[in-house]
Amino acid sequence: MAHIPDAILSTPVLVTGGLVSASLLAAALRRLDYDRVPQAAVLSAAFFVSSLINVPVGPSSVHLLLNGLMGLLLGWTAVPALLVALILQAAFFGFGGILVLGVNTMNMAVPALVCALLVAPWMRRLPAGRRFWGGFAAGSLGVLMTGLMVALALGLSADAFTPAAKVLAVIYLPLALVEGLITATIVGFIQRVAPELLAPVESAHA
Amino acid sequence: MRNLRRDRVRRLCRVSIALCAWALSGPALAHKLKVFASAVGDRIEGTAYFAGGNKASGAIVVILDADGHDLAHLRPATDGSFSYQALAPVEHRVIARTDDGHQAEWRITAAELRPAFGGTLAPNPSPSMSAAAPAITAGSPPEVASPPSPEPVGPETLSAIELAVAHQIRPLREQLAAAEDRARLHDILGGIGYILGLAGLTLWWRCRKTDARA
View 1 (cartoon, rainbow over the protein chains, first blue to last red):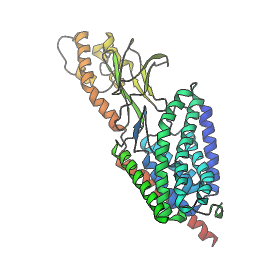
View 2 (view 1 turned 60 degrees about the vertical axis):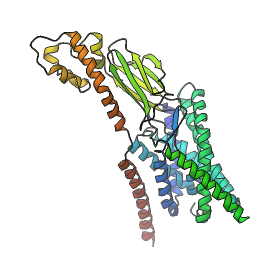
View 3 (view 1 turned 180 degrees about the horizontal axis):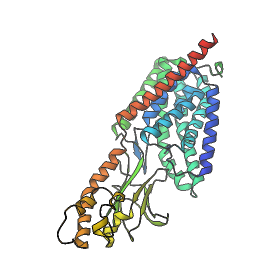
View 4 (view 1 turned 90 degrees about the vertical axis):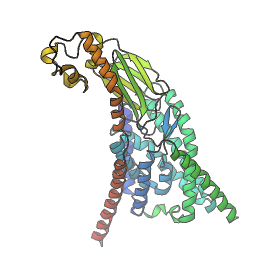
Protein backbone atom coordinates (compact mmCIF):
# COMPACT_ATOMS: atom_id res chain seq x y z
CA MET A 1 0.00 0.00 0.00
CA ALA A 2 1.00 3.54 -0.21
CA HIS A 3 2.39 3.51 3.31
CA ILE A 4 5.46 1.37 3.13
CA PRO A 5 6.53 0.37 6.66
CA ASP A 6 10.05 0.59 8.02
CA ALA A 7 12.50 -2.27 7.52
CA ILE A 8 11.37 -3.28 4.04
CA LEU A 9 13.21 -1.02 1.66
CA SER A 10 16.92 -1.13 0.99
CA THR A 11 19.18 1.75 1.98
CA PRO A 12 19.76 3.18 -1.53
CA VAL A 13 16.01 3.42 -2.09
CA LEU A 14 15.54 5.10 1.31
CA VAL A 15 18.32 7.59 0.64
CA THR A 16 17.02 8.40 -2.84
CA GLY A 17 13.51 8.91 -1.49
CA GLY A 18 14.80 11.15 1.27
CA LEU A 19 16.87 13.28 -1.09
CA VAL A 20 14.09 13.64 -3.67
CA SER A 21 11.54 14.54 -1.00
CA ALA A 22 13.87 17.03 0.65
CA SER A 23 14.55 18.81 -2.63
CA LEU A 24 10.87 18.80 -3.57
CA LEU A 25 10.06 20.24 -0.16
CA ALA A 26 12.71 22.94 -0.54
CA ALA A 27 11.34 23.87 -3.97
CA ALA A 28 7.77 23.87 -2.65
CA LEU A 29 8.58 26.03 0.35
CA ARG A 30 10.39 28.57 -1.81
CA ARG A 31 7.27 29.07 -3.92
CA LEU A 32 4.80 28.57 -1.09
CA ASP A 33 1.53 30.27 -1.86
CA TYR A 34 0.30 31.59 1.48
CA ASP A 35 -3.20 32.17 0.15
CA ARG A 36 -3.54 28.43 -0.25
CA VAL A 37 -2.41 27.50 3.25
CA PRO A 38 -5.97 27.18 4.64
CA GLN A 39 -6.97 24.99 1.70
CA ALA A 40 -3.80 22.98 2.14
CA ALA A 41 -4.65 22.44 5.81
CA VAL A 42 -8.17 21.25 4.99
CA LEU A 43 -6.96 18.86 2.29
CA SER A 44 -4.11 17.68 4.49
CA ALA A 45 -6.60 16.87 7.22
CA ALA A 46 -8.81 15.03 4.71
CA PHE A 47 -5.81 13.04 3.50
CA PHE A 48 -4.83 12.29 7.09
CA VAL A 49 -8.27 10.89 7.93
CA SER A 50 -8.98 9.17 4.61
CA SER A 51 -6.36 6.53 5.36
CA LEU A 52 -8.59 5.24 8.16
CA ILE A 53 -11.44 4.28 5.87
CA ASN A 54 -10.34 1.05 4.31
CA VAL A 55 -11.90 -1.38 1.94
CA PRO A 56 -10.44 -4.86 1.74
CA VAL A 57 -9.37 -5.72 -1.81
CA GLY A 58 -7.71 -9.02 -2.59
CA PRO A 59 -4.89 -9.81 -0.22
CA SER A 60 -4.71 -6.27 1.10
CA SER A 61 -6.90 -3.31 1.89
CA VAL A 62 -7.06 0.06 0.22
CA HIS A 63 -8.04 3.58 1.07
CA LEU A 64 -8.38 6.78 -0.91
CA LEU A 65 -5.17 8.67 -1.52
CA LEU A 66 -6.47 12.09 -2.61
CA ASN A 67 -3.02 13.09 -3.85
CA GLY A 68 -4.35 13.85 -7.36
CA LEU A 69 -6.93 16.21 -5.91
CA MET A 70 -4.31 17.84 -3.70
CA GLY A 71 -2.02 18.42 -6.66
CA LEU A 72 -4.87 19.83 -8.71
CA LEU A 73 -6.03 22.29 -6.07
CA LEU A 74 -2.81 23.11 -4.26
CA GLY A 75 -0.03 23.04 -6.83
CA TRP A 76 3.37 22.97 -5.17
CA THR A 77 1.79 23.54 -1.76
CA ALA A 78 0.66 19.90 -1.93
CA VAL A 79 4.20 18.75 -1.01
CA PRO A 80 4.32 20.21 2.54
CA ALA A 81 0.65 19.31 3.03
CA LEU A 82 1.36 15.65 2.16
CA LEU A 83 4.51 15.55 4.26
CA VAL A 84 2.76 16.91 7.36
CA ALA A 85 -0.11 14.43 6.99
CA LEU A 86 2.31 11.51 6.46
CA ILE A 87 4.32 12.45 9.56
CA LEU A 88 1.13 12.58 11.62
CA GLN A 89 -0.11 9.27 10.21
CA ALA A 90 3.17 7.65 11.16
CA ALA A 91 3.06 9.20 14.63
CA PHE A 92 -0.59 8.62 15.49
CA PHE A 93 -1.62 5.56 13.52
CA GLY A 94 1.68 3.80 12.93
CA PHE A 95 1.15 3.83 9.15
CA GLY A 96 4.44 3.89 7.34
CA GLY A 97 7.39 4.84 9.45
CA ILE A 98 9.92 7.52 10.14
CA LEU A 99 12.82 6.16 8.10
CA VAL A 100 10.66 5.58 5.03
CA LEU A 101 9.04 8.99 5.30
CA GLY A 102 11.14 10.26 2.41
CA VAL A 103 10.12 7.43 0.09
CA ASN A 104 6.46 7.66 1.08
CA THR A 105 6.43 11.41 0.57
CA MET A 106 8.09 11.02 -2.82
CA ASN A 107 5.57 8.35 -3.85
CA MET A 108 2.69 10.67 -3.03
CA ALA A 109 4.14 14.05 -3.96
CA VAL A 110 5.53 13.30 -7.43
CA PRO A 111 2.11 12.19 -8.78
CA ALA A 112 0.54 15.21 -7.09
CA LEU A 113 3.02 17.49 -8.83
CA VAL A 114 2.41 15.79 -12.17
CA CYS A 115 -1.30 16.52 -11.67
CA ALA A 116 -0.48 20.09 -10.70
CA LEU A 117 1.82 20.79 -13.64
CA LEU A 118 0.22 18.73 -16.44
CA VAL A 119 -3.41 17.95 -15.62
CA ALA A 120 -4.33 21.26 -13.99
CA PRO A 121 -3.45 23.50 -17.00
CA TRP A 122 -5.29 21.11 -19.33
CA MET A 123 -8.32 21.14 -17.04
CA ARG A 124 -8.40 24.93 -16.95
CA ARG A 125 -8.63 25.02 -20.74
CA LEU A 126 -11.72 22.78 -20.68
CA PRO A 127 -15.15 24.39 -20.75
CA ALA A 128 -16.54 24.78 -17.26
CA GLY A 129 -19.04 21.95 -17.57
CA ARG A 130 -16.38 19.43 -18.49
CA ARG A 131 -13.81 20.21 -15.89
CA PHE A 132 -14.76 17.16 -13.89
CA TRP A 133 -12.92 15.13 -16.51
CA GLY A 134 -9.82 16.88 -15.27
CA GLY A 135 -10.73 15.70 -11.80
CA PHE A 136 -11.19 12.16 -13.04
CA ALA A 137 -7.83 12.23 -14.80
CA ALA A 138 -6.06 13.68 -11.76
CA GLY A 139 -7.64 11.21 -9.32
CA SER A 140 -6.86 8.10 -11.32
CA LEU A 141 -3.45 9.32 -12.47
CA GLY A 142 -2.47 10.11 -8.88
CA VAL A 143 -3.36 6.59 -7.75
CA LEU A 144 -1.78 4.83 -10.73
CA MET A 145 1.48 6.73 -10.48
CA THR A 146 1.68 6.21 -6.74
CA GLY A 147 1.06 2.49 -7.30
CA LEU A 148 3.79 2.38 -9.90
CA MET A 149 6.25 4.17 -7.63
CA VAL A 150 5.43 1.90 -4.68
CA ALA A 151 5.96 -1.12 -6.93
CA LEU A 152 9.28 0.31 -8.11
CA ALA A 153 10.42 1.05 -4.56
CA LEU A 154 9.52 -2.49 -3.45
CA GLY A 155 10.95 -4.05 -6.59
CA LEU A 156 14.26 -2.22 -6.31
CA SER A 157 14.60 -3.33 -2.68
CA ALA A 158 13.74 -7.00 -3.13
CA ASP A 159 14.95 -9.34 -5.83
CA ALA A 160 11.46 -10.10 -7.10
CA PHE A 161 9.63 -7.25 -8.75
CA THR A 162 6.75 -9.12 -10.37
CA PRO A 163 4.74 -10.34 -7.34
CA ALA A 164 4.60 -6.86 -5.87
CA ALA A 165 3.72 -5.34 -9.22
CA LYS A 166 1.01 -7.91 -9.85
CA VAL A 167 -0.63 -7.41 -6.48
CA LEU A 168 -0.39 -3.66 -6.76
CA ALA A 169 -1.99 -3.71 -10.21
CA VAL A 170 -4.91 -5.76 -8.84
CA ILE A 171 -5.31 -3.36 -5.93
CA TYR A 172 -4.70 -0.06 -7.63
CA LEU A 173 -6.72 -0.43 -10.84
CA PRO A 174 -10.12 -0.49 -9.11
CA LEU A 175 -8.92 2.12 -6.64
CA ALA A 176 -7.87 4.37 -9.52
CA LEU A 177 -11.36 4.13 -10.98
CA VAL A 178 -13.08 4.90 -7.66
CA GLU A 179 -10.67 7.67 -6.81
CA GLY A 180 -11.13 9.15 -10.28
CA LEU A 181 -14.90 9.19 -9.81
CA ILE A 182 -14.67 10.74 -6.38
CA THR A 183 -12.17 13.38 -7.48
CA ALA A 184 -14.37 14.14 -10.49
CA THR A 185 -17.33 14.64 -8.18
CA ILE A 186 -15.38 16.95 -5.93
CA VAL A 187 -14.08 18.97 -8.88
CA GLY A 188 -17.58 19.15 -10.38
CA PHE A 189 -18.89 20.37 -7.04
CA ILE A 190 -16.16 22.96 -6.61
CA GLN A 191 -16.77 24.12 -10.19
CA ARG A 192 -20.35 24.89 -9.25
CA VAL A 193 -19.87 26.49 -5.86
CA ALA A 194 -16.42 28.05 -5.99
CA PRO A 195 -15.00 27.97 -9.53
CA GLU A 196 -12.22 30.41 -8.60
CA LEU A 197 -10.50 27.60 -6.68
CA LEU A 198 -9.97 25.71 -9.93
CA ALA A 199 -8.49 28.62 -11.84
CA PRO A 200 -5.84 30.07 -9.58
CA VAL A 201 -3.09 32.15 -11.11
CA GLU A 202 -0.12 29.88 -10.64
CA SER A 203 2.45 32.46 -11.69
CA ALA A 204 1.39 35.22 -9.31
CA HIS A 205 3.31 33.78 -6.38
CA ALA A 206 5.85 31.62 -8.14
CA MET B 1 -27.57 22.68 -22.66
CA ARG B 2 -26.76 24.00 -19.23
CA ASN B 3 -29.49 21.86 -17.73
CA LEU B 4 -28.08 18.87 -19.50
CA ARG B 5 -24.69 19.52 -17.98
CA ARG B 6 -26.14 20.06 -14.58
CA ASP B 7 -28.00 16.79 -14.91
CA ARG B 8 -24.83 15.02 -15.79
CA VAL B 9 -23.00 16.50 -12.83
CA ARG B 10 -25.91 15.58 -10.62
CA ARG B 11 -25.87 12.02 -11.88
CA LEU B 12 -22.15 11.81 -11.29
CA CYS B 13 -22.66 13.18 -7.80
CA ARG B 14 -25.24 10.54 -7.09
CA VAL B 15 -23.00 7.73 -8.32
CA SER B 16 -20.08 8.93 -6.28
CA ILE B 17 -22.14 9.46 -3.17
CA ALA B 18 -23.37 5.90 -3.54
CA LEU B 19 -19.75 4.76 -3.90
CA CYS B 20 -18.72 6.76 -0.84
CA ALA B 21 -21.57 5.29 1.14
CA TRP B 22 -20.54 1.83 0.04
CA ALA B 23 -16.96 2.50 1.06
CA LEU B 24 -18.04 3.92 4.42
CA SER B 25 -20.51 1.17 5.14
CA GLY B 26 -17.75 -1.39 4.83
CA PRO B 27 -15.61 -1.98 7.85
CA ALA B 28 -13.81 1.23 8.70
CA LEU B 29 -10.39 -0.16 9.29
CA ALA B 30 -6.90 0.94 9.66
CA HIS B 31 -4.77 -0.93 7.22
CA LYS B 32 -1.66 -1.70 9.15
CA LEU B 33 -0.73 -5.36 8.96
CA LYS B 34 -0.28 -7.00 12.33
CA VAL B 35 0.71 -10.46 13.43
CA PHE B 36 0.12 -12.12 16.76
CA ALA B 37 1.63 -15.43 17.81
CA SER B 38 2.06 -17.37 21.00
CA ALA B 39 3.48 -20.71 21.99
CA VAL B 40 0.90 -23.30 22.89
CA GLY B 41 2.86 -26.36 23.89
CA ASP B 42 5.44 -26.90 21.19
CA ARG B 43 3.34 -25.22 18.52
CA ILE B 44 3.47 -21.58 17.57
CA GLU B 45 -0.05 -20.46 16.86
CA GLY B 46 -0.94 -17.06 15.59
CA THR B 47 -3.03 -14.81 13.43
CA ALA B 48 -2.24 -12.26 10.75
CA TYR B 49 -4.69 -9.38 10.58
CA PHE B 50 -5.05 -5.74 9.71
CA ALA B 51 -5.20 -3.43 12.70
CA GLY B 52 -8.88 -2.91 13.34
CA GLY B 53 -9.99 -6.45 12.72
CA ASN B 54 -9.87 -7.70 9.13
CA LYS B 55 -8.02 -10.98 8.73
CA ALA B 56 -5.05 -10.99 6.37
CA SER B 57 -5.51 -14.35 4.72
CA GLY B 58 -3.44 -13.34 1.69
CA ALA B 59 -0.33 -12.71 3.72
CA ILE B 60 2.76 -14.88 3.84
CA VAL B 61 4.08 -15.83 7.26
CA VAL B 62 7.77 -16.54 7.55
CA ILE B 63 9.21 -18.18 10.65
CA LEU B 64 12.83 -17.32 11.36
CA ASP B 65 15.11 -18.27 14.20
CA ALA B 66 17.10 -15.68 16.13
CA ASP B 67 19.96 -15.75 13.61
CA GLY B 68 17.63 -15.09 10.72
CA HIS B 69 17.59 -18.64 9.33
CA ASP B 70 14.46 -19.39 7.37
CA LEU B 71 12.49 -22.14 9.17
CA ALA B 72 9.16 -22.14 7.36
CA HIS B 73 6.91 -20.26 4.99
CA LEU B 74 3.24 -20.50 5.91
CA ARG B 75 0.04 -19.42 4.21
CA PRO B 76 -2.58 -18.36 6.76
CA ALA B 77 -6.05 -19.88 6.50
CA THR B 78 -9.03 -17.75 5.51
CA ASP B 79 -9.41 -16.55 9.09
CA GLY B 80 -5.80 -15.43 9.12
CA SER B 81 -4.64 -18.15 11.51
CA PHE B 82 -1.51 -20.22 11.14
CA SER B 83 0.39 -22.68 13.24
CA TYR B 84 3.91 -24.01 13.21
CA GLN B 85 5.50 -26.96 14.95
CA ALA B 86 8.59 -25.67 16.73
CA LEU B 87 11.55 -28.03 16.56
CA ALA B 88 13.69 -26.57 19.31
CA PRO B 89 13.13 -24.25 22.27
CA VAL B 90 14.90 -21.26 20.71
CA GLU B 91 13.78 -17.76 19.98
CA HIS B 92 11.51 -17.52 16.93
CA ARG B 93 10.70 -14.47 14.85
CA VAL B 94 7.34 -14.58 13.14
CA ILE B 95 7.16 -12.20 10.19
CA ALA B 96 4.00 -11.64 8.20
CA ARG B 97 4.15 -9.80 4.92
CA THR B 98 1.93 -9.12 1.97
CA ASP B 99 3.22 -8.65 -1.55
CA ASP B 100 2.29 -4.99 -1.58
CA GLY B 101 4.75 -4.05 1.11
CA HIS B 102 3.04 -4.56 4.44
CA GLN B 103 5.13 -6.24 7.07
CA ALA B 104 4.76 -7.05 10.73
CA GLU B 105 6.83 -9.00 13.22
CA TRP B 106 6.27 -10.88 16.45
CA ARG B 107 8.86 -12.51 18.69
CA ILE B 108 8.43 -15.78 20.55
CA THR B 109 11.05 -16.07 23.28
CA ALA B 110 12.89 -19.28 23.93
CA ALA B 111 11.44 -19.35 27.45
CA GLU B 112 7.92 -19.49 26.08
CA LEU B 113 8.70 -22.72 24.26
CA ARG B 114 10.92 -24.33 26.86
CA PRO B 115 8.21 -26.10 28.92
CA ALA B 116 7.08 -28.16 25.96
CA PHE B 117 10.58 -29.47 25.39
CA GLY B 118 10.98 -31.01 28.81
CA GLY B 119 12.51 -28.02 30.57
CA THR B 120 10.61 -25.93 33.04
CA LEU B 121 10.50 -22.16 32.79
CA ALA B 122 13.53 -21.94 35.02
CA PRO B 123 16.23 -24.61 34.98
CA ASN B 124 16.34 -25.04 38.78
CA PRO B 125 12.85 -24.76 40.23
CA SER B 126 13.63 -23.66 43.77
CA PRO B 127 16.12 -20.76 43.75
CA SER B 128 15.56 -18.88 40.52
CA MET B 129 11.93 -19.47 39.71
CA SER B 130 11.01 -15.81 39.96
CA ALA B 131 14.32 -14.53 38.71
CA ALA B 132 13.68 -16.12 35.33
CA ALA B 133 10.29 -14.54 35.08
CA PRO B 134 10.99 -11.12 33.52
CA ALA B 135 11.88 -12.59 30.14
CA ILE B 136 8.70 -14.62 30.07
CA THR B 137 5.25 -13.36 29.30
CA ALA B 138 3.24 -12.31 32.28
CA GLY B 139 0.83 -14.81 33.69
CA SER B 140 2.45 -18.17 33.82
CA PRO B 141 5.25 -17.90 36.45
CA PRO B 142 3.18 -16.70 39.46
CA GLU B 143 0.65 -19.46 39.02
CA VAL B 144 3.43 -21.98 38.88
CA ALA B 145 5.51 -20.61 41.70
CA SER B 146 3.01 -19.38 44.25
CA PRO B 147 1.52 -22.51 45.84
CA PRO B 148 4.35 -23.81 47.98
CA SER B 149 3.47 -27.45 47.92
CA PRO B 150 5.17 -29.77 50.40
CA GLU B 151 6.21 -32.31 47.76
CA PRO B 152 7.94 -31.08 44.55
CA VAL B 153 5.70 -30.89 41.52
CA GLY B 154 6.78 -33.22 38.76
CA PRO B 155 7.92 -31.76 35.46
CA GLU B 156 4.98 -33.36 33.62
CA THR B 157 2.49 -31.62 35.89
CA LEU B 158 4.33 -28.36 35.50
CA SER B 159 4.29 -28.46 31.74
CA ALA B 160 0.64 -29.50 31.74
CA ILE B 161 -0.19 -26.50 33.90
CA GLU B 162 1.85 -24.23 31.69
CA LEU B 163 0.11 -25.54 28.59
CA ALA B 164 -3.29 -25.00 30.16
CA VAL B 165 -2.45 -21.49 31.26
CA ALA B 166 -1.04 -20.64 27.83
CA HIS B 167 -4.29 -21.88 26.29
CA GLN B 168 -6.37 -19.81 28.66
CA ILE B 169 -4.57 -16.50 28.34
CA ARG B 170 -3.98 -16.69 24.61
CA PRO B 171 -7.25 -15.01 23.56
CA LEU B 172 -6.67 -12.30 26.15
CA ARG B 173 -3.20 -11.57 24.86
CA GLU B 174 -4.49 -11.55 21.31
CA GLN B 175 -7.21 -9.06 22.14
CA LEU B 176 -4.77 -6.90 24.04
CA ALA B 177 -2.39 -6.80 21.09
CA ALA B 178 -5.23 -5.96 18.71
CA ALA B 179 -6.66 -3.23 20.93
CA GLU B 180 -3.30 -1.51 21.10
CA ASP B 181 -3.34 -0.71 17.41
CA ARG B 182 -6.84 0.45 16.87
CA ALA B 183 -6.91 4.08 15.80
CA ARG B 184 -8.80 6.06 18.36
CA LEU B 185 -10.83 9.20 18.13
CA HIS B 186 -8.35 11.24 20.10
CA ASP B 187 -5.60 10.22 17.67
CA ILE B 188 -7.68 11.53 14.77
CA LEU B 189 -8.62 14.73 16.53
CA GLY B 190 -5.05 15.24 17.68
CA GLY B 191 -3.75 14.90 14.13
CA ILE B 192 -6.28 17.34 12.73
CA GLY B 193 -5.41 19.73 15.55
CA TYR B 194 -1.75 19.55 14.60
CA ILE B 195 -2.55 20.30 10.96
CA LEU B 196 -4.69 23.30 11.81
CA GLY B 197 -2.10 24.51 14.28
CA LEU B 198 0.66 24.31 11.68
CA ALA B 199 -1.49 26.18 9.16
CA GLY B 200 -2.17 28.86 11.75
CA LEU B 201 1.53 29.09 12.55
CA THR B 202 2.39 29.49 8.87
CA LEU B 203 -0.15 32.25 8.43
CA TRP B 204 0.99 34.02 11.59
CA TRP B 205 4.58 33.84 10.33
CA ARG B 206 3.53 35.38 7.06
CA CYS B 207 1.61 38.17 8.79
CA ARG B 208 4.64 38.94 10.91
CA LYS B 209 6.83 39.15 7.83
CA THR B 210 4.48 41.47 5.97
CA ASP B 211 4.07 43.60 9.08
CA ALA B 212 7.82 43.92 9.43
CA ARG B 213 8.10 44.97 5.80
CA ALA B 214 5.34 47.56 6.09
